[in-house]
Length: 331
Image 1 (cartoon, helix red, strand yellow):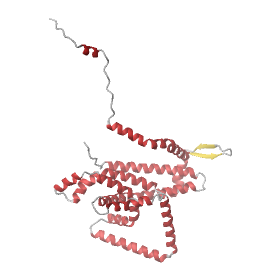
Image 2 (cartoon, one colour):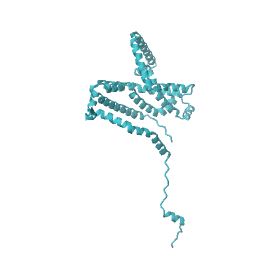
Image 3 (cartoon, one colour):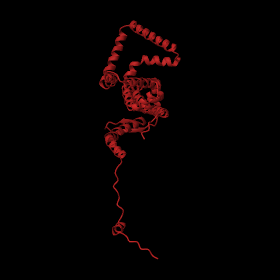
Image 4 (cartoon, one colour):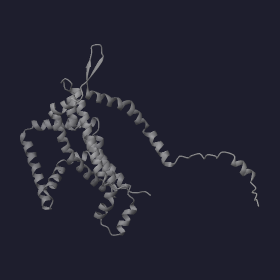
């Protein structure tokens, strides 16, 4: 017995047509990514049109000798790593200054990170005049840029010359008072049970406090933004559970700001290596401006070696700190 099935005419007509494709709607993440590319497009264009030619010229300067003919033509002669060997072995100041700069960096970076996090935690508290104090700590960043930095550096050099002309007695008195302060601090911290190495580090931090404050404005601002992104409900639950302020800091605040510790660490390394007061940058600039034959080529080789050292240190620090970074899950 055969069973017959009646089909709907509309269904049979639709079956013969191709399936209608639904229009794909871009997700929110994709639209944000497109908007982000639009914002960074000016930088990408500038990098391709301006920075890449400069990088190519600097790299060619370190591997070639340029000679200029009378008719204005330029002749390039490939010399390999000759300029690099000259910078390493013939220019003794470069290697010595680089090692000294690395030692200073090993002291400066932890000191700046500790100080900036400490000040950010204080400025995040509810108190009168909080906005004024935040502006005061960020003021050195504005003052120490561009023309103001050159004015301050010239004033500092003029003051140093005046101190030298003032005689050795005032310098001796200041040195004696500084040593007395260091001895007092060392005795206080040693009486509290701190180790000798930690005591020396703290004393050196106190001696360099002006430089640390001057270079901590951006880091304080980044830490403040990270602290304000922590939900107040987390702190309320800690208070309900009876956690102390010390426990709350180490169990909640510090893990939540570890991503910004990594960001500030990388920023501080690059900032300390590229500032005008950096001794290595000064040696590279002096080598470029000297009248020695081939000085610009040797200076370019110094710059590229310095760049590789900086990138190696940044990668090493980022790899070490990434193992201790805590990322909060949003789902």
